[in-house]
Length: 76
Image (cartoon, rainbow, N blue to C red; front, side, top):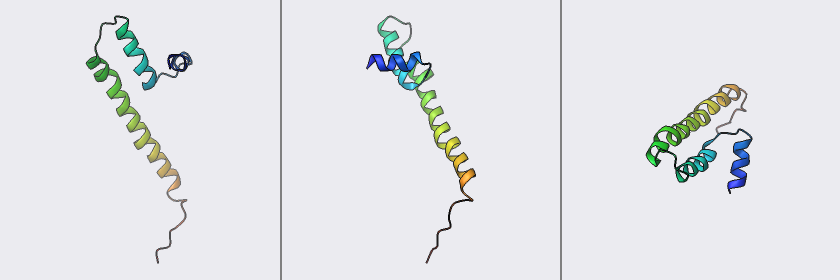
């Protein structure tokens, strides 16, 4: 799994998956931070940002652009 993740990182697609690989690798190589630091300052903010961006912003834009053009539903 290291090669595909490294290629993903080399193509500058910085994302949570790459960080889940690079931060533990850094810890194994002696970086001066722990799991709590990684969770608090990287993983949790990234997940919250993805949720806000994906759920709120993307769905809000889809709703605003397609809500009035949706076909009417006949309730009988």
